[in-house]
Image 1: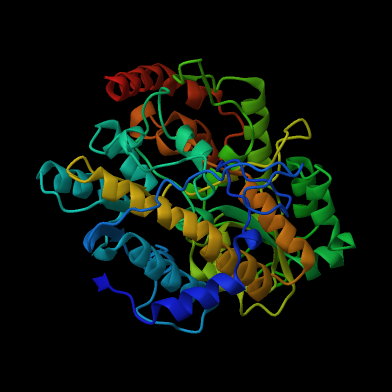
Image 2: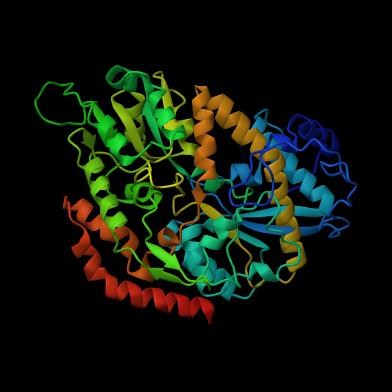
Length: 499
C-alpha cells in the first residue's frame, strides 16, 4: 500500500499551526525536554546570551523518492490506523494528524511510505518474522509487531543494532529510550525501537477504570480516589478496602453469580495478572554495572505483592471467572453499572466505554505501598514496537525516516490523540486528564514480562499465576520448582544476546 502526498502544504501548515510542539507531552524516557515552556527565541539563552542553534541531524537529507517499506501488523487489536493513517482527511483530528505527519515526512525526506500488512497471532510472530529475514531478501526498512515476539527475533540478532544507525538521536523527544534500554541486555547493543510513532504502546498501557457513581454511593466523594493518586497514597490496601464495599446480591439468590454487583471484575485469571504483578516495584530482577540481569524475585516485597494480588482476585466482592479477557461481555458488565472496578483494560479501551451512561473515571494500578516512589504502568506484552531487519541495505534511509516519524509524532500526533481525543473527547472530568499524565509518565519496558516466558522458565509470571489460578495463598513452592531452570535459562539468554 503506497500512500503518496496530496494537498500537502495546506494541510501541514494548518495542522502545525493548530497543534504546536509546545502542546505535546514530554515523552516517557525520551530526551532532555523541559516540562516548562521556554519563551526564549532561537539562538538565545534565558540569560540573553546568543548561542548557535544545534544543527538538525536530518537537515539537507533527501532520498530521491526512495520507498520506505514497513511491514505493519494489522490484527484486530493493532493500532495500525494511527500509524499508517487514512488515505485522505477524515475529519477526525487524530487520524488527520497522522495523515499530515506522513505527508510531511515524505516531503521533507523525499521518500514514499509503503506498507505491507501482516496478521500474525502473537505466538506466530517469531516464526513468521524470522522466516522472512532468514530468506535474505531486502524487503523492509522496518517491521512492526508484538514486542514479545520481536524480542525473540532480537535475541538471535536478526535485527540491526540501532547504535549502528547513523540518524538516530535517542535524546530527542519522541523516543522512549529508557523503555528501549529495559528491553535489552548489556550496554553496547539494542535491537528494539520504541517511541511516539509506535502509539500501540500507549494504547495498550493498563489502567483501572472505575464507576464514579458506585464509588460515591459506597464511599462518598468520587474524587477521593484521584486525590489518593495525587498524594502518593493509592496503594493495594486502599484498593482492597474499596472493593470490599461494593458487593450486592442483586438477584437475591444468596450466591455469587454473574448477575450480582461486584467491587472488582476481571476476565479470568491469566494475562489479567500482568498489570498487577509488574506494576509494583518488587525487584524481580536486578542488573549489574554492565547491564546484565539477575533473578532476585525471592524477596519480601514480592511476597507482600503476591498476598495483595491474592486478596484482590479472591476478595468476596470480586468476580474472577465467567468472562473472557478483553471480552465485550466483561466490558458490558462494567458499562451496565454493576461493577466498581474493571481490570484488564488499557487506555485504548476508552472507545469501548463511550456508550456508558454512568459516570466513569480511571486511575493507574496501585503502588505496593507508600514506599514505592512512582506508579509503574504495565504495557501488555502484545503491544507493537519495531525492529530494523539485518537484511536492510540502507541504514541511512531506515534511521532517518523513523527518526522523523517519531519526532513528528511527538510534535503533532500526540497533541491530537493524547490531548484532544483522550483528554477532551473521552474523559469526563478534569482529574482523569491528570491520571492519563501519570499513567503515561509511568510507562515502562519490562524485561521480566517480555523475556520472562520461554527464556526464563516463565518464572516471573507463573510463580504467581499458577498458585493464583489454584486459589493458593502461598506462592513460594511454585517459585522454587521453577528457579533452577529459570536461572539456567536466563544465563543462556544472556550468553546468546552477548555473543
